[in-house]
Length: 141
Image (cartoon, rainbow, N blue to C red; front, side, top):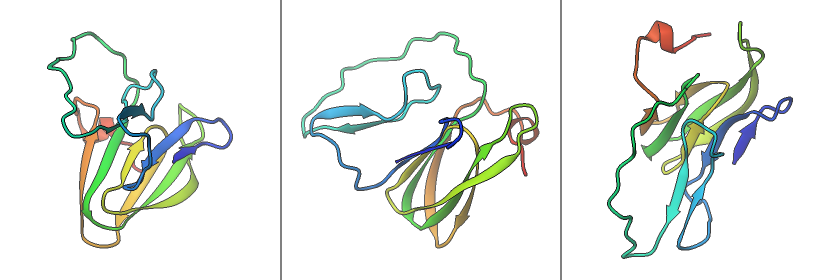
């Protein structure tokens, strides 16, 4: 499920539910090729092999941090999603509340967010680095 800013169409988050349905024997990218952090789902049969490979080093320009959170166990975790009103002095405007359960993934792209653990849960987070400092990385509202 794509959550977008209703005024601009900017993607705020992609929510991938545990029971997400897709075609067999395929890879589906849920993000546009231009996004700086890609999210894909692989649905492959037993025996499928991804060839040995590495990723080439080259410089990429990244202007903001995206992150992905996977609820490994437990939950739910409640998230509030916000759009930002401008680039220079961003003001968060509430969009929607979502619940993440065990097996769910949220890919946070633009905007702002907060989370609350409603029950015990373990979540795995991946985000772009390198990490510099809390003051330079985050704007806390």
